[in-house]
Image 1: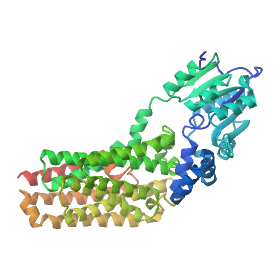
Image 2 (image 1 turned 45 degrees about the vertical axis):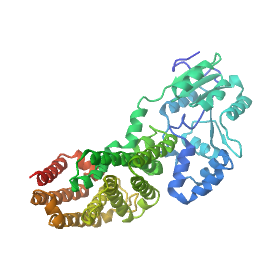
Image 3 (image 1 turned 120 degrees about the vertical axis):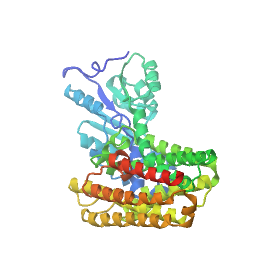
Image 4 (image 1 turned 90 degrees about the vertical axis):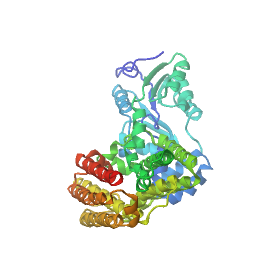
Length: 488
């Protein structure tokens, strides 16, 4: 039968309660320790990937032991399920005993149990035995007997465990798992702690669709070439979709690699994977799916575009795994990633990119990357720390400000020289209107440096620009000058 949430485990102290056995992954923890430890180790030691693969060939228990030995995850930073914590506290208050029994490595389980202080017993995977599914069911039957324990789990792997327990509590289980549990309950009490309804919205946030605005750079070659026929527009749109999917794959990957850092950040700790709104296991499957989809879309257009999108993702991965931790190198890589978007647009529509356009792009995007780091240092200072996650120190703010201004102004200078080129004079009806773009860019760059230096920029510079009224007005005026240069 099914019990209401208030019925199961709410007895008095004189009631002979069975042991409340709680699973870790997906139940007590709103994530999965196998995936958490994998991304933690890969993020710090990318060269360990072959050794991780070798340990997997020895079995999942060996893999878990290998990762447990190398992880630096702190139990205090993990995303716990508050409803399970509350149930454990209530059970112990009623005089019952509790046990953490998990397929995760026993050493990790013991650290988590020690941190929480809510368990009388802790059992996890040791040696060659993976304490999961039927193996866990046999262990619990031998230790407690059917009438001796109530089990809290979350997945189909827990069905044989629930079958051998006096009571079953599902936590964030899928509808299919809940239905099977109800059907196989065999008269035992069943309770469901349902999944949060916002998982779909959390997945959407993990893709960071607002960041897709950066991929509008693929349309720059089309605008520069004044090619607005339908095939050209469709080709650019294909590049936009392909890059957006690949970019989202990169964002998911970056979030997985940055879990520990994000959880200590005042704002980034609310990201879906860091907060536990999405488990790391979902991210492990989501990012390759997005990447494959992006590459497939690019292949529809051309093999050359496929190569550029693949290069973009490889550069994103190199940045996420290693290069973002190296001062100045990280800024250069960010500028390169922005420029690759313009390259993708040129490849998609089949035009040769101007050296002038590439030069403006590199200088401008280097400036924006420096502004991004400048804004982050303001957060670091506000948090009372001396060093950022990227290795910059608070005292580097002056240098970053100078780099941002110098590079941004160089981009405007190159643009001014480009406007005077014969090809521009021939292509545009009123090329002199393009001179109006230069002072607007000078103002825009200067204002962003000023705002970031004051600690008032709380997002990526481009995202901040799209959300700020003054910046939107500047971009609108730039668009007006470009349109007038074409139509007059």
